[in-house]
Length: 155
Length: 407
Image (cartoon, rainbow over all chains, first blue to last red; front, side):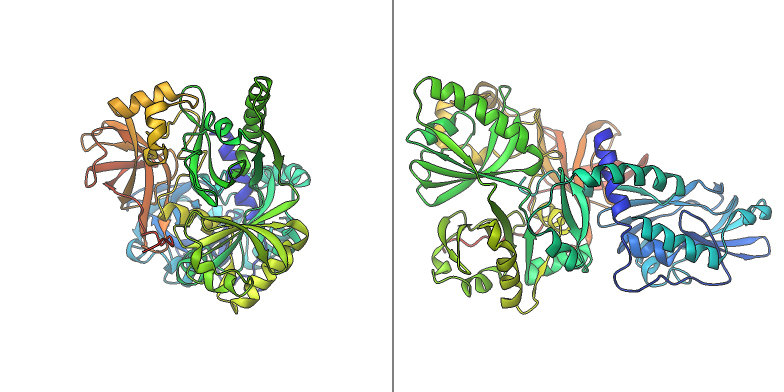
């Protein structure tokens, strides 16, 4: 099992070879980004969370999204759900801490929304933030774009 | 399984976390330098192949097409796979068949020249050392292909037994075809496309049959077989002609036959209900448990004569304690090692392979359950990340096979 995990990790890393279909993934200016490739859009104390275009591009077609329950507590940097493609399972980490107040139930029947519309219809959870100061730990769009370029060139 | 130790498909668990990437990068760097390359390596990279380490080789997991699209295209049109990482060898000599019969469960002596079959190498406890397709070329020449991940142990196993066999006066020798490369051309367009490249009438070559013939100007070993459930061929080509042959196949199909990687290959063999050695078959799993009783020749069920025969023949008589079965399920796709429970929450087995079926657009899996709970339509729970998900036992293949057989 340990051996398989090593193989899995290696393959997962190699799957992050540069994007074939576009020279770069789409990045929106008014969002904040985590280094585990989730985005967050803040409106007052409310945060909407999804995975980035870069993440969905590397995952391939998503066939299932595991969603948390409304009321669940999420913690910045920790997993709250998972996205499954044909070949891989990917944890989704929360970019902010707080309480889940809404989940995108459309993803249960249409998980590929995460691929087709990662920043809009493919949003995953809405969180009532417990500490908006945590947003300072995240990247803006410019930093995130550079981060993705560096990551792709390293693999 | 002929696709090699494709554990990646079952056990890839990506964490898109920064820390993991650093650790992973270091490991990848170390392994990269040591990976072997097939003669197609540069061809793969030039065609957008994503290369990953696989059984010690640098192999394409995927090209520009998604794994979903590649899988579907194989069944609708065709796929060309590089399977050169698998090991081809020949056994020659008057006693080649009796020798091999000591090591595998097949009725080798009963094979007609020019025909082959899937078989299993067994250990002394009846467990599977590897699965292999063996082909009788002539009565004193057997050609076989073993899985990439099992090559070293298989060759050591064969060599050990060959020494003992020859010491007793047996006439057998071997040659490992490292001067050759292996392509798998699969799907409905496989035969029409390949027919353009050879003068021999391929409509007279049926599933499981073998020929040595000229293809695209070089002498190839051609077997009508594959590990996708589709009609198709495995082509052993002299390595120096391999890339030319791959190009010719792609050109003749006018783009419909697509280069396809190991990711789709794993989806295809799973849809076809075929075992992956290392997941669905291991040293402690017997062919009976794996559902390969059909591969034990009739004479051999009576006579035994292969390693572990006592265990296997006893299981034939009494029935095995566990059996490999297929599953449909809801929720997340099952992956290797997911626990299987009965409706009362009792453990009854484990998933060995699973994923989302591109052709069926639903979750499929295979695994082992206790005998008695293996009937189709039995309801189960599959535990994924601690949560139970509804599942049901089903017969395999999930997608019907289309082997070319005399009608």
